[in-house]
Amino acid sequence: MLKEKQKFLILGLGETGYACAKWLNKHGHEVFCSDTRSGHQNIEDFLKLGVSKNNIKFNLNKDNFLDHIDSSFDFVVVSPGLSPESDLLKAIVNFSQENEIKIISEIDLFYEAVKSNSKQIKIIGITGTNGKTTVTSMVRLMCEYAGLKSVEAGNISPSALTVVCEFEEKNSWPDVISLELSSAQLFYTDYICLDASTILNITQDHIDWHGSMEAYIASKKKIFSHSKIAVVDENQFKEFGLSNALVYRDSLPINKEDIGIKEVNGMKWFCTTDKNLMPVEAMKIRGNHNVLNAMAAMQLCRAIDLPFEPLLTALRDYEAHNHRCTYVRDIQGVNFIDDSKGTNVGATVAAIDGMYRNLVVILGGEGKGQDFTPLYESLRNRTKSNGLKGIVLIGKDKNILSHYLNIKDFKFEETIPVVVVNTIDEAVVESFKLAQSGDLVLLSPACASIDMFKNYHERGVKFVEAINELALSKGEIA
Image 1: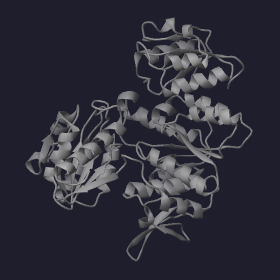
Image 2 (image 1 turned 90 degrees about the vertical axis):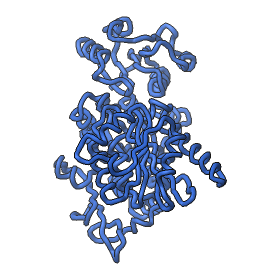
Image 3 (image 1 turned 45 degrees about the vertical axis):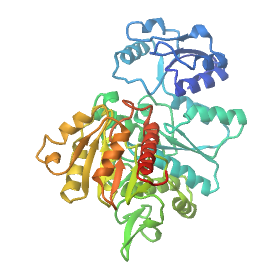
Image 4 (image 1 turned 45 degrees about the horizontal axis):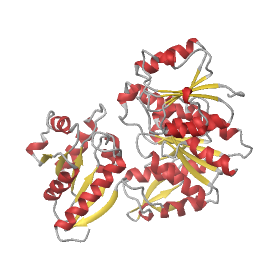
């Protein structure tokens, strides 16, 4: 794809843009950087790379974009933070097509760097609305247990090119790269070949970025057109009709290469058609969504010919990342669960459906234009079975959620308490009031965190801090 000393315009000066500038500058290309913001705190870092100050511009918009690009450029590298639905991106894409300038992503450059290395590195790609980070880290751990040097990168952070720069500097490359890919990254990516890939699931998310659910799905499905082997669940296998696929099922396996689930003496086991592999309960992580994640991770590793034994050992040892259905603590018999990573409806539905005790759920934040119908259905079913003790709403779209919970046939406020609060501290206090000993309080907002916090991590940290403060007020040790 690349030739010597070509001219690149990098759109966006965040982590991805910095990694692209660093790698391109190191390899002798001419680098220009533009950002829609009026300035950036990391500009000195770009200058230290050797990028000329005259080549860094700000305040990029649809009206002045021709001040940032001309027909002499060979490539435009687009940050995944920039929506193709924006007037700015539409203008730049049209100009680029008219002038035969290629639009690429950081992931394209990542692959260019990896394939130029003499070592035969396996690249495994993971996408999906929910579970990407879990499966990406599972795959890395499984590969390590199989004796392979493995790293995880991509949407999970560090960025893909960041780890490539580290490999080049140390002259030490891994055997396997477990690569988390978002729909935004896939949208702009066209020059990658993955050894194996999976789409874990697709539910509504980032509709504001893509413009429609159809566009979001199309972006996710691109991963299979850039992959040697696809790992799919049984529904995807029927829908996509892929010939080069490994299948996992939430039921008995059908074909020799399938991984599935069977019940033995009342206990669920991972299995193939001819072998029981491991009891599901042997995993430290819980929830049916994690059972599916585990099978996807195993099949991704099987796609690069790894044996079952180290994969199963890794599954037994694997522990969840922070803020992903993580147990926090108990206060007077009430257990608090931190699922701040539940930033969309699908993730929260999976979390709710995976909890088998009575619960109070904390919802709300930046709704991202999602359809909350699946969440409504999950909450309604849980309430009718007397499993939902209350709902606490927080964040920018709390009133939208409150309205949504009462516009259909089932009125939540007529059945269970629905409490609207302003802070995470209030949410913890009010949810505790609604719970009884033996119940769960689940923070799984179904929304982004940027209305109140820097990111989902900070939201989770503040949630834990509020829980510890509540514990102190109840005479317990924080």
